[in-house]
Length: 192
Image 1 (tube, rainbow, N blue to C red):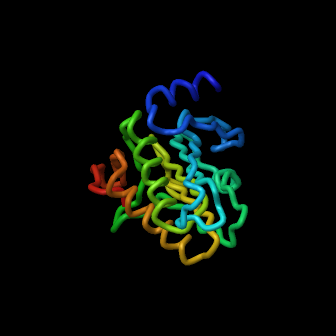
Image 2 (cartoon, rainbow, N blue to C red):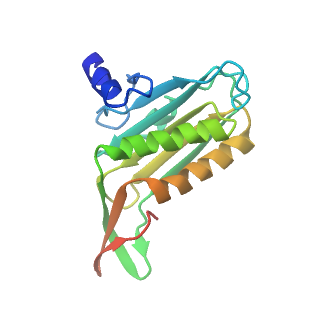
Image 3 (cartoon, rainbow, N blue to C red):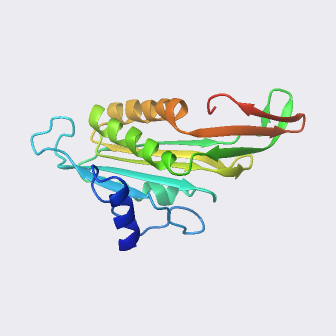
């Protein structure tokens, strides 16, 4: 793992070196290169009250997401709220049954885009920690597509941040979605 963290740090020298998580991020316990990155805020920062560090954890998974394991990664010290959003594949769209979704992505840029969204959320909202995980490849009906967990001192900031993160992910993440139904298949604009 140290060599992997060094490679990621060398690729982005303006950001802190990644700290890799040791907990399982998916049902197959596979860890992604960009699973976790932690940075520091100035000691006098008013954005995150009572918290000297911000924590952004990113996971890009080809396997089924495990929302409970992802939630355990959050740093919750000083928090009174965890807000979670889990987006799943619908079983039907209009009059058609959905067989699967297929997510294509820009391999190198997706983790960077998700990390930027997470860091902006920590900076703009009064939250302490965020986990953003997204599936790639084939996602079957009822399986999680995206998982967002936000830890904050108060629920209002957590809900606002979680909603904002999802909106930003839909508009900025380099992901493309193909919907395969009983009526055929089509590429969808936006993510959902």
